[in-house]
Length: 563
Image 1: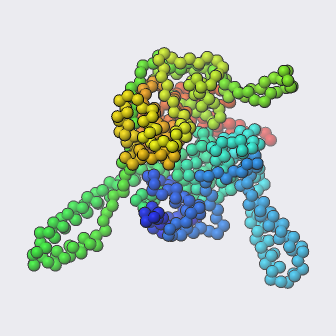
Image 2: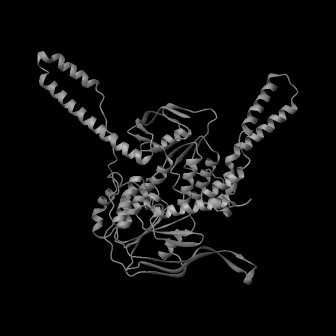
Image 3: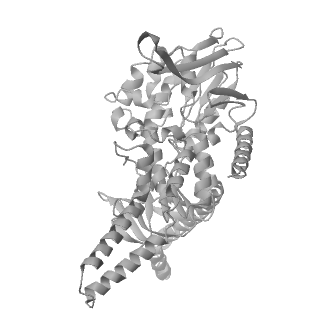
């Protein structure tokens, strides 16, 4: 159990939150919610011990372990994936070394009757009891199981961490946390670098094996599936709900309606009281009543209505020019990359190739809204690049008549010029009449009057993503390709983008692992895996239901295999 008592945080006289108290119990899975800037990440860092509150204390049992998924990476170069993940058990090696040191001292010392000798025996007994209580017999298997669950392939476990991207390093950090089996797990946007299968695996792990969890996430499905409690930070206070996110939204709406009624009643009473005071303040017979009402107003505790983030992304795609009936046709499309030569040397050496996918044959009709899903590294973004004609490929890929492509890459936000202002970024690419409406367009994307002159380098990830999206609106397109468009977007903005895509009258291809975003948006799913691209003529939920059944069947088969 972790107890938070009277926590307050102030920045230069501005109060972020004040005098908040709550308890984290075993098996609590808490979603930390609130608008941007409410202090969610700050509170998580305080719980992790990475920063101190201005006032208040956090107390926990002496031996409890609180683990935090850091925003900065802790992986060290010079280790393999397996070796780095095994650092989760470094404390066991430290205990073993301590036990060995105690035994060495007992062998060397001769003061058998001294207090120090008895103290040494007691310390050895205590640490040995602690060590042997830990089941470390299968830790190598546990490391492998967790890494595979988070998306690593078995042959990748011996790769050097220096070869990995930031996203894959983050997975190793997450694996180390899960392997330590802490009393409280603190996660800040854990799904940003995970594919769909890894997210589902993480859900199952947190639900079935974790003790207490506190997380911040914009993945609605993930939050709903994992959490059983919601703590909302708003206006410097907290509201604690013993329900998941969806149910919390309903209760929050009811709470605010009740607050609004109480506020309206109080304001009416205040107005009537002030009117009474003004009418009778010079009347001798009413002097006592007037004074009484003045004192009452002075002591009155004013009711506040929780603020609602009224800023909203107003997103509408322009009408699409009409394309041919089949914007994308593929026949036997594949992509391979050369690797080290195999078999012999010199001219006789045979070139070796790594196949990403092969023999992909599919047709996308005009107006289709489809999803590309699968593990990271299985070729989703590669096929998009083939469609964009950025890379060559095997087979035949034909774009239909009058196809005009709008493309949002997952690294689009990072490609922005950091030295330009928000206004300059759009002004440089806008042509025609839209140039006179740039400020209106930026305002529609939640860039206020003061924001348009900010340099791109000071923008958050979500702000950069919104800025990059504006480019999609500057020219009408009829084939929209979005590669992980929801990374760094909050729940509200994701919903607004989804509604705009539903109204988009062109053809849509979305590469995403965000189930909630895809649910109700796409009607066809292309699954990438094992070098193949499979077509599923169903919604994302139908696809996931089927996949879950297949996974369970595979688990059953593995479980019943003879030893």
